[in-house]
Image 1 (cartoon, rainbow, N blue to C red):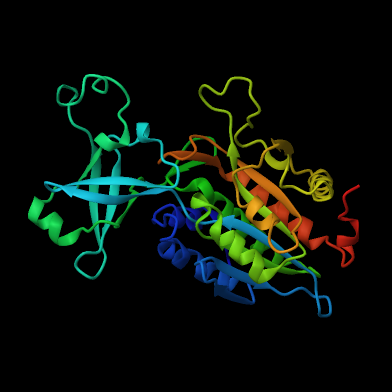
Image 2: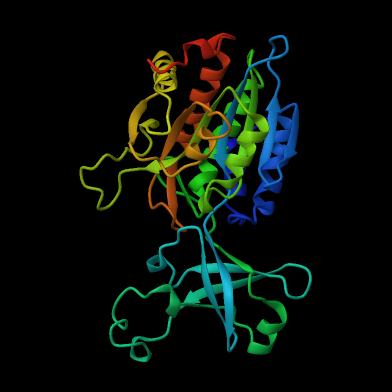
Length: 357
């Protein structure tokens, strides 16, 4: 397969797929992963699994790569004279919503109808005095499809999801902006790893998982961990890049590094092994800190059954949980190569070194 990263990433950034409604993004990923793996299947939670068999005799050790494919979004909670009231799916900052173009995935007529809409707010003089000149709470915001009230009632029902309509856009400096780079940048990096491994010998079985429902509690990752029960897992997600207002806090330069997490969900031996691989292959890798958990799938993988050792990789991202997230293409490629080189070099007795010492 002649895999091309940028077109694939753009195709993922052009569809919806909020937590619990991942079918559109899963349909984009599936044919690509089918070409790069020996078999694929979908879990009971809607996560996509792709297996590459290793070359060692059975029973072979297994490594899982987990990258969540779901995204934040909105859901219709009411229809008010043709305007839509909504709530959040995952963590959405209401300050970024006014003026955003969105799609309403209307299902009241049986089949889904994609309705362009925009998030609007009443003028200040119609709002309570304590809200008129401030960032508005979500309860005051509405989605406007442009349709008459009767048409909205006919097409839309409570429970329909709303997704961002921002188109992916290449920016200067080898960066790209889009509405779901958290965490489709990591799905892209996982695909880069699968592509490299398709041309490399590896002893271990490799199971890539595009997990569902991370933004609402890591549900897909937990189910897949129980299903697969890997010997250890790599969890890849985005982390915070330096940007406006970041100051001198522990943030990371866009386009200059990936991260390896040192935290409560991460096995120290796996951290050191991954950092050694990064150093050997001259892949820039900074230490990210997560002393109380990283807000990723790592915890949900870590606690499956008797426990699964985890190492986390991060791709620096600006403007997290907005419709204009930004990452560096170079960082996506770096993350994919780091995972591939690490897996390709795994000896069969590697788990003998993964100890709490």
